[in-house]
Length: 300
Image (cartoon, rainbow, N blue to C red; front, side, top):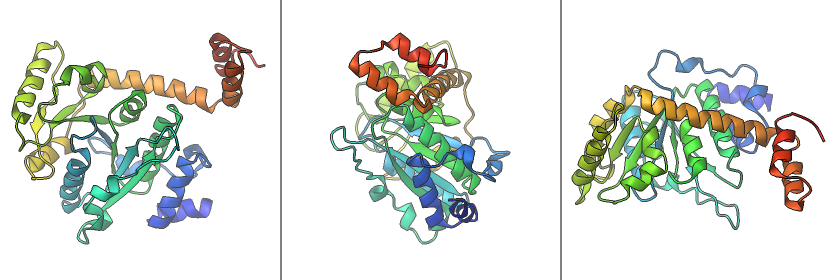
């Protein structure tokens, strides 16, 4: 694996894919990799940006449009697309690449990289995998890494929280802005893009979001209208997002999620984790006993 890591660090894409697979399958950890650092991310506004939102709002097409524009400007952009796994088979559709035209564009294909990640079964493992894969991509010279999540569930919130910036994508007149806020997405947002701006209800929804943010006592994130399919607002969004600053409001919420994610990481990586799950299932220990074991208060 050391040879694969060296080749990946030197720009070989096949080796990069194999190393990322090893990280995803947890057969190698980022801590074990010598010579992998994130020096390429120095002196830039952000190195990782999560783009999240409910299914159907057009995230993949929008992300592809942003990646295409940034790549044409000479930036190296990688995308980690988190796909939901089937609870029955454990498989994932991994369909984001189907919507990505930038990876097949001969003019910019060397400037973009797309990788899908299946959520699988363990909620705690997803942020761990995403964080480590993004870190290795930085080491390989991909100075900007996007993380696209499906935008539902605590696991996706934790995925987003590993990023330096979080962008929430909304759709036109979805009518569930309050529900999104309850889910924590808008609380984490450094910016909000109302996509499919060519459809009825988009402007109204953007106005409602701006009014909602204005009612709060903290700084409001920018709200822009876009259409990845029609190219509306893409240049303005790309310019704004590339230099996007973190708000104090979103940073506090993000740090909360990171703290919880790191706690999850310690529990999931504990050598007694699976044994504790087994004993909990059998009823031979309770939750407090399991936490004591996994937090290292005593061994059994």
